[in-house]
View 1 (cartoon, rainbow, N blue to C red):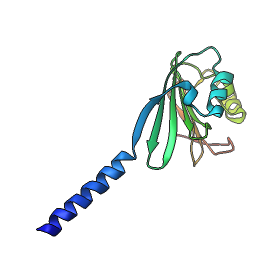
View 2: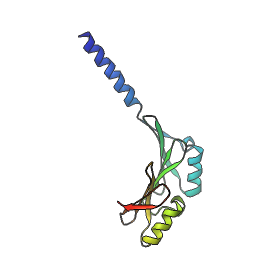
View 3: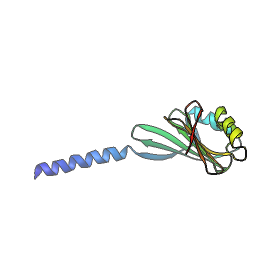
View 4: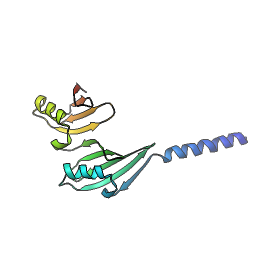
Length: 144
């Protein structure tokens, strides 16, 4: 009986420890890494930062930034941009040149609403709802 109680206590402590690692907190815009602050100033100079959410998931830290004109930006812990999501056309300056050139050449009637970078490559969502996949260098791979 004592072993069962000890085991339940150990399991409880382990669960609390692991769930405590997943954490979100609201921070000020000044709490962003300098590279993220510079990125926002450069690409969204006329927009106000409404909220910054710092997320800790396991050992990774990231920042979600919500801007006044409906844009959501994701940064890693060092301030590197990982994605931009918008309710309207993204500024051309936030889309890698090669991807922007591909979209303009092949989909001239549409514009980019979202851009995302991950370990496998890049993805954009067009105003017609189409998702385009690119490799890390911006080479077109496929339509999703």
